[in-house]
Length: 469
Image (tube, rainbow, N blue to C red):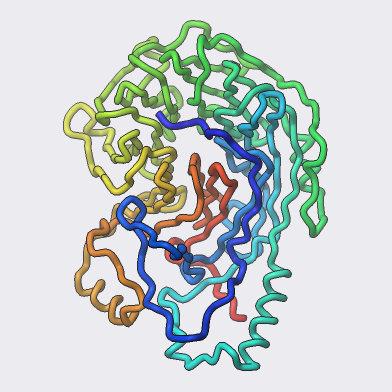
């Protein structure tokens, strides 16, 4: 069970696109892929990311670190593939003092990127003179492009009592969001006014966040006997909600007019803390839960307060689950021992295990299926890696040899990587949660102890338009 951000400090924005001075005293050594938990940095060594592997990569912060956030569905288009992009989000902080916490309602605009080549072109092939006048001119152009392509953050803060363990925006009514607080309360908020203010904001510079709004929640439920982290809105029934706590209880919320009726009689079946909840993408009355007891349970609200099915999923705490919305028979789970698994719910009473991966070295903190590719999912871990997997991939030795020949040994690629591993993102510390953007194919946002990252890996989405400089 890995949740809290230890000794959080105010996050500072990192510019991952900044340039560093390079020595021209001799040829650079070939790049090497660094594996956390396997390789060690020597004295004087530092990690560098390859910008050619991203269509877009940027860090941002809303102040205090956030354990949880959610992407807010907007009206800018169901499927958006052309830059520049804009997205809305809501997050909850983990401040040093309980009274300092807030909800951050934000908009990121002017997200400008471009499609890059799969294989980077080496300097040797182009016979580039780093000291030439033309190179200097290109650097000046790059600086100008960098300034014009800076994203713009607009932020509003709403005071929140206690740290926010988890936050979720309703799919059908995005201005309604629910929060789990470490005070033991689940609250529902209406942030419509603030979202409208963000939509009307046209400033081309980062603004907002200097003052904190005082907004009362429309519902505040204190019926849980302990704090919790598990909460999910139904994708089928607007306003239907489930919340689970560290006391192994799950409560069902039913919408009623402008409020909610919370069933005081909880669902009980786990032997330890309920860590995550997911509604079925196709069955209105069915949801799944996972627990510190190592099990995944399937519940049907029509069949009483006990699980309809329960399966031992991992040998340690099951921290997170994700129900595939494109292939509703598949559910993914991530564990405290760093493993994650895929199960076929059609075979849940037998051998339902479809795949099991032991790549990560630390607890899995977030897992989510892609909303656009049924075989693709993203995973975040305490080993500071965000990985993206395509379960449809198999090892092709001929294709692999051809790729290595194109690379001309520029990169020393490890030989033991799983063939399904599509992308590895590093650079954040204390990764806590990730989400795919359902309306922008290929975009992933993640939160960590040192702030947020927005990334669009170059090999995830091939439909993005190519922009020539």
